[in-house]
Image (tube, rainbow, N blue to C red; front, side, top):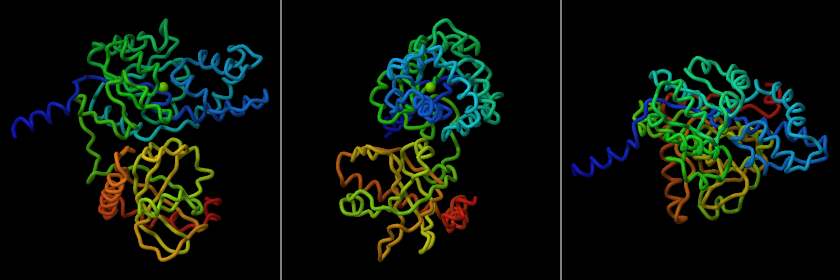
Length: 393
Ligand SMILES: [Mg+2]
């Protein structure tokens, strides 16, 4: 018995570090959304259509490298410098609209609150980093070091930027933990002999991050205690408070597998108009309250993601209203208030184990929604509002 306990404890700490160095774009803020919005507009000028595939080539790159990849991929009649000259003002206008990714504020506040030294190391220019973080309250003063790609000779994937960050923190690289979303970033951190947690920003790419020490689904799944840092204290009865996030739309006919294959009748909603927010919700299992316009308010547990077991092509939200309905309600307006997170998306070896896990999730959600922290949202006016009210909100 003693041995077992010992092994468990030893394996729960991977390595003890004394500081955290964070990447910015795609790790703490949702830059990808802004990039695709701007490139969609920019490329129409040349009669081209942004298809997103270039996103994989430019993630983690310097602005110049990203511009070169776009010029090449779309065979644009401009130089990389010319492209940057044109799009830079478009980006400057949008910096204020880049949202913090789920878990970013929680992580920064937690580490700062415990006095863990933090640095920001990004391939962006120092000036752009300063501008981007100025829109996020409390971030600037949380980092004792901020270093841009223009302050080192070679940007990521070279280790220069991480070496320089460690030097300025006065901490040995071997005691630094890096959190990164991109492959060039992970390569850079590992080349600097640091521990690296990867939190891939592009979907379905996790398998490529073999050099990272750990790959997590999102910042919500980061466990600082595994690195000898103070643990988060905000998990309550196996749930993590998030949001509240508000999503709604008419119920549509979903994938046939929903009720037939699983015996779990999910109410698929049309999420037109919410695609940008859904793109940044980490895939996983969540819960909250569901307001069905002509019926009432119900407990709800839901998955967001691609459902690895079925390997969906599109990211979807599939809420399961925890109530026995005697009739279908296609077309009815469904409003969701998402308040808690249970676990990341997982793959399963069998349909039975998937179903068993979904029923576990249901129990966790049903119990948690009785806690005042979550039950108070049952009366949120959004749940019973009509679409017309939304428009006027
Ligand atoms: Mg990044």
